[in-house]
Length: 332
Image (cartoon, rainbow, N blue to C red; front, top):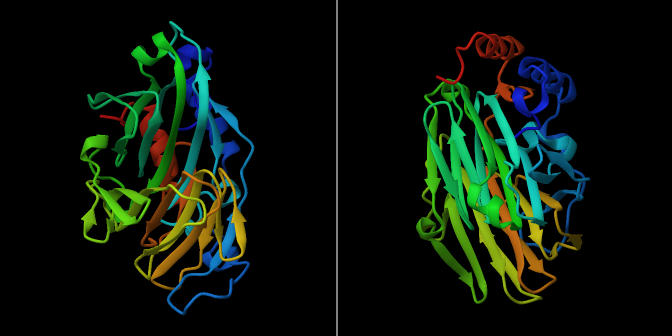
């Protein structure tokens, strides 16, 4: 998802809007993992990861007319410190009245990465240039690989728009390794009924979308090792410990409730970035029915060149992506 409405909805040529996005979201790959480390919590054993950084809740903004989102990673988006994750938009629960109009974002291109959309409440409708069209409902996931290029759109589903209701979702951008950036586009609809649940402890459950929790492996097919776990904690005061690959980056997002990591509080729509040392992470739920997303993954350790809807390794590749889009070569 990116804030690029389609040309028919604005009257402005889409290429001009894309160029504005190039200006609005500049990125230079000078940010390293070491520059984000700011604190070290005591009291954990040697294998327990310490807290590196808290990203507080960011100001919300509209993407199109259907998604009022928090840009969760803020200024840390598109940095190696979060690799392979790039960007994270979260739309908190919001009521929409019935409507006959399409609420969302019109056609826009992507190249070089994957988008993962989770519908927590309501329904999201997706359509793209390679023929995929689908609707995901509560707790479903759509995992789209843009690869060499795709043009897609995303809206509230027609049925949801007609009835109205509470809408909640998130979209994550996941980088592709250099060798896979020009892979064929792919679409994975992952329904809630096909997402396994691991009971981590009493009152603690993890929906395993990608990666492995205990003996439970998630259904998502990925191009590099990745963890995406949707964790719910029933009781206030419960401490949760999770095994994670030692070499992976680990990020905790508080979707609902509040947690503490070490001595630090992490509130709703805030993020805890863990240091890249240790094979375990731990947090304590400070409110009942807290809900946390754990994002993890093996850092790609490759240059990140990001402008608007394209994420490549060099500026020349970004220029080529724009040229291909302008000339109708992207999205076939």
